[in-house]
Image 1 (spheres, rainbow, N blue to C red):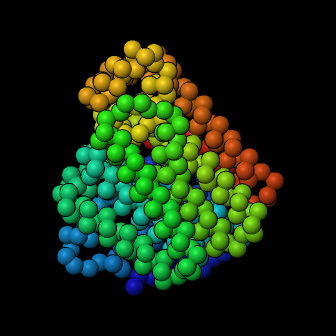
Image 2: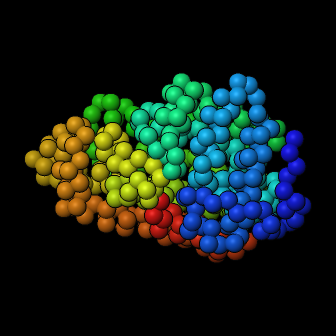
Length: 347
């Protein structure tokens, strides 16, 4: 088994680990403490994947493809920061953080298969490069490795947190998929928020719970960090929905307008549809179900749905910050920085 970086022997992570350039984390990497933690996450990911270097070799190559391409590492970083907030250490939190990253990446691999997207994190999606069948198996393998990592170090309670978040994530994906298969008829921001709660927020809350429990949080601290992560999750996903509409593929490193073309849940689209007249809504539904973008984008512009969505995302960020106010968490400034990143990011 590979040796861990010498930084593990320190109570405070240092910067001797080489900085890995990640397409998705430029904003966060401006902060040295954040940068160090992301580097540790990346080094542990590499170490775990090397330790699991089995046969057939193509399976493990496929498994490594997307997760080593970069990523925001938001959920794993959230777990570590929540642990440190209440006295936990990076050393204890890191295996759990990496496990959440494996599960998240597995879900992305499977999502890309379902959505037939061609780019993620600036590289070909896993199924585009290795085929649908191998991509599905690779996603399954990442989940299995995550369970192994958690099981070797965990209590039943922590394992339950991970499983609960994963279950909700699957339920949200299924609800979103059913909506796209049945074709959009009536689509509301309330429905979009419920899918966000299941697909994104639930797993972020699980990450925060695990981190807080590893740090021995008391009940009030735990509730504060849960509320923080919940608001963070809503803000992050609404911003993601905005970027799917307005960003370029070069900017985000993934397929854009994917939600619109696939009739998938998107907060911006939901607001635009809600704001339409009855006649416009009928045409909106038809154009969206047919994958025709021009009319839908015109409605988004006319009803200022991007601006509205940005405003809602900012309200969630303010709520996230308010949730941890007055607790004197050890790394409050990093939690606040993470909240700002969720709503200001351009990728």
